[in-house]
Image (cartoon, rainbow, N blue to C red; front, side, top):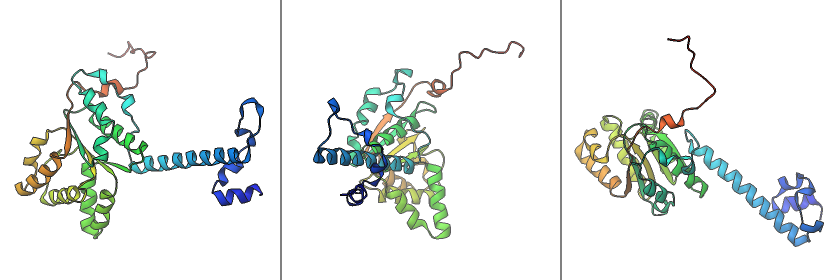
Length: 251
């Protein structure tokens, strides 16, 4: 069978453009037809998995592509390293549970949130990262142009939705209602939330106590809460250039 026909049948056309030398056999022998086909198909599966991974990574819209392996847990002895590493097993994702990371500014909450999201992407999950303020602005725009239903469906669809900088400021009634709808529609799907405030301090930010109680009780009681304390993690991430010396002429 001509190679062009084989590529059409098995959907492995991109492989057939490679040099034949990419298949190596110990001892300089040749592969049999079935062995060659098996290698060919396995290579195509790997290629497709890589393409799919890159596509999921692009759709996640991370600010930075960071991993748990890169995080410096030694930066602060107050960080719950064992708890965070346990979250890296992603059991919470498979159970449809959520994660809340809270603590002062700069301790690495956004890094950990994106790193957990990156792990989920590597396992085949669809993830979306966004600042909470941007999500609320996007939904507000949906009310204005009558695309709210479409926009909220896009936020409900991912397996993991990361809401960064949650509960930064007082919410309007419309924003509180949008958050309520979002969390309700995502029932059984995971959220990762980062916040500078403890969950117990979120309630006063909602203008309607009934909405606050209903939303936050549902969210908090199905979440793994991680208290992140310690000095700012950001100085550890600044570029270092030991060859640069201060200019003595500057006073």
